[in-house]
Length: 430
Ligand SMILES: *Cc1c(COP(=O)(O)O)cnc(C)c1O
Image (cartoon, rainbow, N blue to C red; front, side):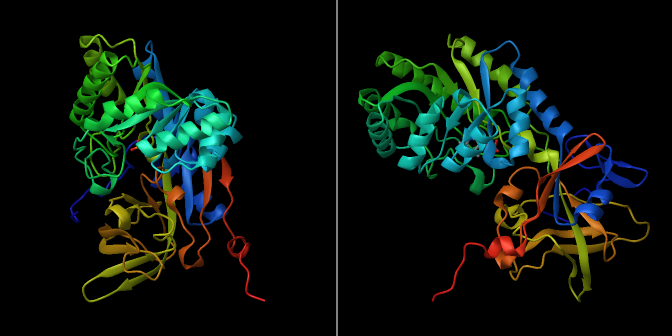
């Protein structure tokens, strides 16, 4: 990406982060107040932004039989989950740990779908005992283990096969999941056989068809290509006497990081329903698993400029957040907007914004024109999804705190880790 990308005055995405009198706010709270009181690095979320994102799905599905299962790996803080549970969301989980989180906030297990390529027996058992809506199964081997686990506790596991439709979602290779070469799902040409296996196993009950083709998708066409292939499969299944109740189209809708125009849930769902009606399949219940599009632009990461370092070829702004706090730039070469909390007058300098971790890959942004001084706080935009959840303790760095703004109030929803927290559980040899 080039240096000429937008140097915005206002954050992208939702209006819940905005500049007023030269200072950046989350709803009615000046972000500088949060940085001063709670320290940095600090993840800040807006409750109103979560609600607005949810509303874009709710209004697009009104009057239709659609279950929105929040793809909670994007941001699994209990406070975030509780908001979505209150709003009526289901959840898409990928581990026994995520199951524990949704049960902890009192979510309805009958609205939970369980995805992932490597479910273990204990995770299957816990989900069966909780009574989840569906297991999205990704291989024949998993079908056998799931059936065995279900039989051993006298239950039937509701299953959907995650089919890999071999479509190109037009996104970054690391977040594209619906191509033949990916580890995810069962190849569409083997799906009918796998369904026959599923239907024959004593511990399983076939209930659906599922796909999830990738992430940060901004076009409708990959979804419609996948949908067509799934509808052909559903017809073939009907021919084989296997009836299904629901069709799960996964998540993947993109957000604005730079200047992308995100695909609106309504634009997608209207076209999906037009096809379902044309194929006389509009009676199917629809499931969607959006993650990023529900939370990505509802959060920022605040970080303080520790030092400025001016070199012959590069200028560095060394900040107190690092790749262990926000991995996306170095993992995906992702671009996040940067906004100083207070705009300074005067000339800008082109900086690489880097963290203190001992890796050359430790950078948050490159070639950004900034007017900053030591001690200034910067907001890293669009950090609500795949931010805190990917944080690590590399370099024995305690993980950041998280705070949720609600109007003029704020609530710390995760305390800052201490170094003592990190050492707990370790021991030396006698
Ligand atoms: C990650 C994931 C999602 C959510 O994806 P987004 O791109 O964040 O919407 C949904 N379903 C499955 C199976 C996933 O792995």
